[in-house]
Amino acid sequence: MPQSADKVKDHISLFQEPEYKELFANKKAQFECRPSDEKVAEQAEYTKTWEYREKNFKREIAVINPAKACQPLGAVFAAAGFEGTLPYVHGSQGCVAYFRSHLARHFKEAVPIVADSMTEDAAVFGGLNNLVEGLLNSYTLYKPKMIAVSTTCMAEVIGDDLSAFIGTAKEKESVPADFPVPFAHTPSFVGSHTTGYDNMMKGILNYFWERESVKERTPNAKINIIPGFDGYAVANNRELKRYLDTMGVDYTLLSDVSDIYDTPSDGEYRMYDGGTTLDDTRAAINAKATVSLQEFCTPKTLEYIGDKGQETASFNYPMGIGATDAFLMKIAELTGKEIPASIEKERGRLVDAITDSQAWLHGKKFAIFGDPDFTLAMTAFLLEMGCEPTHVLCTNGSAEWDAKAKALLASSPFGAEGQVWRGKDLWHLRSLLFTEPADFLIGSSYGKYLEKDVGIPLIRLTFPIFDRHHHHRFPTFGYQGALRVLVEILDRIFETADAASDISYDLTR
Image 1 (cartoon, rainbow, N blue to C red):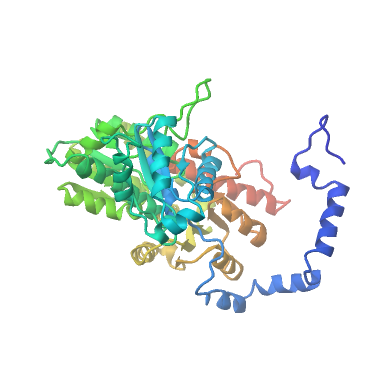
Image 2 (image 1 turned 135 degrees about the horizontal axis):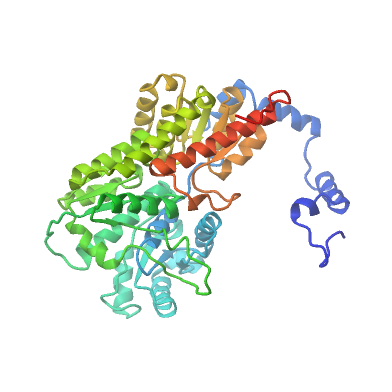
């Protein structure tokens, strides 16, 4: 065999060796029982047609590669942003391995999550014993300041009552009676990771504002900021803090994962690092207002906060000129703080950069997929740059998202030919790209299969990004973040131009 301890080959080159090629050929001939290569090629060509597209869009049950994840992933992400918090999933170990690996592969960090490993007996008799023992083990071994519990499909199907179970666990002294154990029911078979984020955020606030102690709200001048589920939160949260600190705003960032998913390598393992302090979370009920940066990640949370007497406001991922303008002006309105000249200069530099590159951006067609807030923000920014969003696809988009996306496209001549696809998956998008192609595709790493199949270059700008490193360490929020997004888009445009022609291979673009 070509592999040896003296010369270790990676799988890319190893599987090109004769021995592996022969192995794959034998597997294909003897075990796959597939039709002929000609028949496969014929069917593949058929799937590129309008006729197949019409059949594909008539699917009512099967879902093929949806651009979303399930509720507990969002709940785990939200919980991780609080001081000393151990996310705890009441359900099967296999599900939790998925959440852990999904986050670890994107952030390239160890991701602490525990599960109480429900199996067949718990599915029949309920998972009370699993939760009682699991909380005891988690509290004893990992010494958290808070354990935030969410659920998987198994626990939800059998109807486990988290409130009652946690109460029993405290009676049995698995954790002290006053130890914070907020929870959220997060059934994976409805909603998505954004729903789970919302449920957990509401659950944590509800615990500190009602379950721990019921007290009257004492209003102050602080502002709460909820970033939402964001694969770029490491850099984006820090960029938000820079803006708010520069403006002199007194604020609390609720669920700040910027340190937990970006710990340094200095010889010390930090199971918990940073995060919103529990005292700040308790005091957040007294804030003047709460601002959500991702409307579709926080509808229940904002409703709950509003019922407590706070002002609320929401945005759709403040990326680009108009979106950042709106966010900063709202903060200025709520706090009475002026937007400093240094931030205005950043805005001017972004406008200048877009102007410098206008000739290369104008008229380029883009297909976009991802979460509701991201797709709205990305569409708006493309329109600002004179690009043409031709397909905007959101598997977990609501009717409200659909209406907002269509109104956004209608607001600009560059959106005149744009189409909005709510509740569709990436196999639907494949049909769209074959029948109504775009110049570029914007989304997550899952778009790489479309890039290879359809031949449309992918620009990775949203969660998850598994096959590239360190994108999350640079912001996409704000003017500086938009500049970074602009550069990502332009690099792909220039690479495509260089690859397309041997005649126009200019040194200067």
